[in-house]
Image: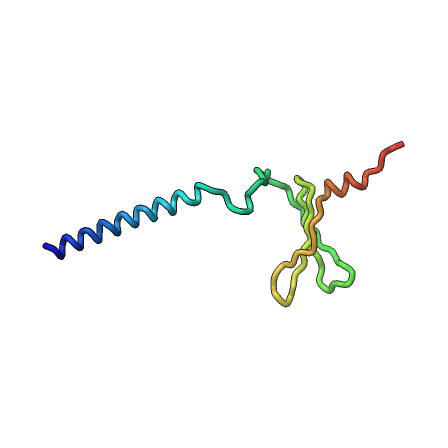
Length: 105
C-alpha cells in the first residue's frame, strides 16, 4: 500500500505542477505587450510603393520602399556576401516636406 500511496501522491503533485505551468503559459503572454509595441499605439494599414535605383559608388542597386499612408521611406540593398537585405537609410517624408517649405510672399 505504501508504494501505491507514494505513486498517487507523485502523480497528484505532477498534475498540480502541470496545471500551474499551463496557467502560467496562458496568462503570461496576455499580461504584457511585446517590447516593440510600447508607446507606439495602433498603426493603421498602409499603402506601399517600391522602386529600384542606382546609388553612385555602390555596385548593387538600391530598393526604395515608400509608405504612402504614413509618408515614410526606407532604402535597402542586397548584400551578396551575407545574402541579406542591408538597410541604407530611413526618411520621414512629411518632416522633410514641411522643413523645405518656403513661405509665400
